[in-house]
Picture 1 (spheres, rainbow over the protein chains, first blue to last red):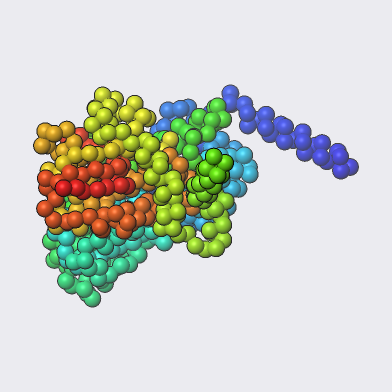
Picture 2 (cartoon, rainbow over the protein chains, first blue to last red; picture 1 turned 90 degrees about the vertical axis):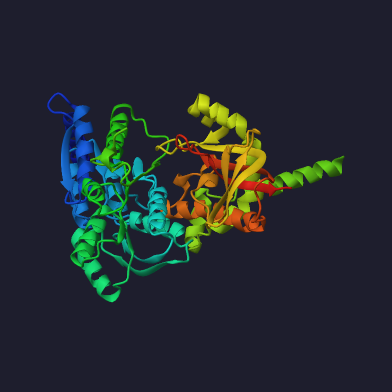
Length: 313
Length: 211
């Protein structure tokens, strides 16, 4: 009885495997899972990954986890259930996502992480992330220069569960703290959110009307901050962001936000799909799992060349 | 003779000991268990035994490195530098500077001197003299340390910063700060591939400013 059941199971698995391995019926599937596309950065990643996947002949399944680790876990189940050949993932938390990526690996589906790290190696095939420390130092050096090496400033920090929030803050402070005449009067998390940054900035301004600068951990928070500053009639406060979104580009060109740091989100997503394709077709893994992509400072000098997280030559 | 051989073995094993302490996964795990990631200690322990011998061995005269880079940056990088296998980081070059200081900036906290190495009185390289040091060139020049051996970007960044802290504390703080222009300078250090038209920005690992 037991043996029969086992034989049936094996046979069933073989049929399943045969079905999955037959590309004649449909193209292979790549799942692309990111945070909400409300933030244009994540949208650019998804669009970049999808374009590359289609170019290489894959079908795509584009999903968003809204920074909810439970939802992410369900989406990974969906990708497994649909027989995805690979998962491109911008994850929902450095610690919380390890189990989800492991679950995919156990089901035989390789994951290629973009933008955010997880606190484990050997679980994903690749982790392609921006060199956030290098980028934050570029942004901070520009901020220091624009501030004339002095003044009161506010820092808006990203979501705590995301390693990128901490690393950018560290990059900022490793530069700014070298200047004793620059004084941080408030430091708050606005969780990468534009609306939250707006309301936090309003509150901070009530307690600290005398500020000359705001440095934000991403562009959506910078957009929220400058809207609150402008609503309060403070049009000469220096605001610097991080990401290189078209919104901030337009603000720079209009004389609002002064600078940001471009993360090559589009190229990063495409690189992840290429590595997934190489892995699927040849079994080849990249030479190193964790891969850093350098960032570029964007200010009034080069804002014109910026379009959808890529800089024209 | 035997005594000498014994001494050599002793020295070699001492070097080997300091050499293998670092950034290996096993050590990292042990540290994680102890809850103590201490990048300053990691750098201090690898400095004399690994970092300096590596840099001294790899470094070529700056003039040669610059000429090779102008001809073919990738070939020059393979010969005189290092970069991570994946990702898009630029080459970090390793070079020896022997020249004359032609300009100084010591008011900024990110102080530096510009040095002429070919006798044309024009600057060929900008050498950081602290206390603020930009970037992570020293870390990025080493082929025996690897981001993949660290828990995340934060620890990797702290490790990079610790090299700057170390050279500042052991070397740069002791340098003279006034009337540097016209003095000779010798240094061994690292710099990332400079942007077009910009001077190489070197972080020194050894430095001496003479008469």
